[in-house]
Every structure is written in C-alpha cells, then in structure tokens.
Length: 339
Ligand SMILES: CCN(C(=O)c1cnc(C)nc1NCc1ccco1)[C@H]1CCCNC1
Image 1 (cartoon, rainbow, N blue to C red):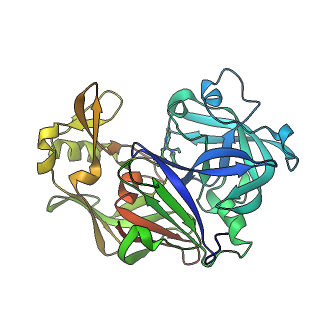
Image 2: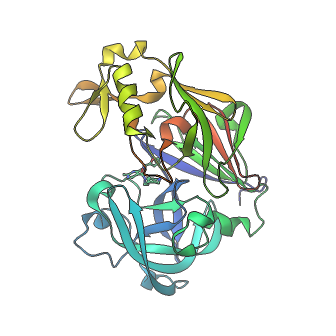
C-alpha cells in the first residue's frame, strides 16, 4: 500500500488516447502483465503459455506460465468470455496477483484462444474486470472484491483518470481506495447505478448543440473504462454523424473534414441531474496518417440487443474529460471535471 492513506495508485499508459492500461504481476516470482482495468467486465484473463501457436495474438503478448510460479494453484475449469468480434477461451488457474502493491490470491483465466481481431491491435496483454461480482463469469470473485475484503482500503471505491495528450505523464491513473485531487477540479456529482450490480446509470437524454435529439424518454448509459469510444444505438449515431457532417468509413468509423472541426457542436449527456458536455476537442481524434490529417470521430454505432440494450456506452474519451469515481460502498458513480 502507498504509505499515505489506504489508497493504492496504479499509473496507466496512454496509447493514442484509445487504449489505457496498467501493470500487474501474477505468480512468484512475479510475471508482469499490462491489463486494461475494465468496468465493463468482471473477470481477469491474460494470455497463457499453453496458448496454441494458431493464435498470433498470444505470441505478441506476455503469457502466464504456471509451471514457473511456486504459488500457482491448478484449477483447469473451462472459461469463455464473449466480445463483439469473438470469444476469448481458456481455462482457470489460481495464483497471487498484485495490483497497486496489494497482493490477492485470485482465480483468473489463462487464455489459450485469443481472436486476432481485436487483440492483435492490443497494446495490453489482458483484461482485469472491475465490474460487480454478479457479472463475473463462472461466479469468480473479482479482484477488487478480494481487495475490499482485506479491509486495507480507506474507502470501498476506485477512481480513474485518463490523460488526453500522450505527452502527459502518466497516461492515466487508477486509484483504489479513493480519488486523486491531482487530476480533477471542483466537486463530484454523484448518481446511483441503475441496477445494483452494473456500472451503468439512467440517462435522461442526449443533446447535440442546443437540441435534444436522442434518448428523449430516458435510456441506460454504461460507464465503461475498457472501451475506447462512445457508442450509441446505430440509428441514433448515424443521425448524429449526419448532423455533424461526418462520413462513414468501411469498418464502422467516421471522419470529418479537419477544416470543419472547430465549428462542430458540443454533444451533451444528461446524467443524474447534471449535463456532461463533450466539445469537438473531446470527441475528435486528430491523427496524421501518411502526412495528412485524419479527423476521426470517437463515436461508434453499436446495437446491444434487449434486455441489456438499447444502451449508450461512455468510454475513454468521456472519462478523459470527466474524472470518474466508482463507489461500491454506495453503489454510485461520481464525475468531476478532469484536469
Ligand atoms: C478490453 C475489451 N474492450 C474493448 O473495447 C477493446 C477491445 N479491443 C481492443 C484492442 N481495445 C479495447 N479497449 C481499449 C481500451 C482500454 C481502455 C479503454 O479502451 C471492451 C469490451 C466490452 C467490455 N469493456 C471492454
């Protein structure tokens, strides 16, 4: 634990404002892994040493080798987690996992089948789910729950800062046990999670410029630290894109003419009685490819089938603007303006 006050910080790396990840260790002696701290899931998985050579994504990442760890406990139960583009499959193992300097004996998954899409593009090795236990696959107690039950944290909360410019050191920070005033200004506005057991809230509408265009009867917003973008129902996002004059690319992304960026409207999310606006600076990603500027829009259409959907997912570009506190004690989420 950091000597100070029952909080445990983990610095995060920012890769192109689209991937944020931090280091954990598994096993004795420590095997290091870069993981996304993902509020959209609740399991820990890393690539396995016994991953089949068929899966290139395993061999471009760090892999866990249980035979090299004296604290490894064999389990072997099958595991599969569903992603939009494919399943990560493997088997369960148990070992000492150290997060922010706090050790826990943790059941996690060794991935032996890792789909190239999207994980060949991942700078991180695996995913550490920060979701509630009831969304955990195989009923496995999540890492943060094991840490809470050690009673070493000052508060049963964790907070996330994502930096905006890659030059900013660090690229982000996860704090378990509290918040880091270094990275936000003003006070937190809180809202209850919509159904106990998910990091999601009721959203009252989405306004573009001055006009409320979407989610007028209310809808669900998932606060997902593991997603790069903001997603909304495909029909809504396509109207939003037309409104800002964006054109759709092949793989579902959108771009705008860089000259028009400064005149783009703000997009405002009405959450918990407060308005959270994103300006074009927050939702346009300026990338220069082959010497020319590409202005991509960090909104994506994604239709999540009922009963979960239709939902909006507020990801990294939202969190980069609004420092977020996830409060397990009070089942609420707090936002403050990020610095
Ligand atoms: C981690 C799996 N996720 C991604 O969206 C995702 C996929 N593939 C790549 C290469 N990166 C991803 N996220 C990068 C990132 C890091 C922090 C912010 O965004 C999502 C799946 C749904 C639950 N929530 C997480």
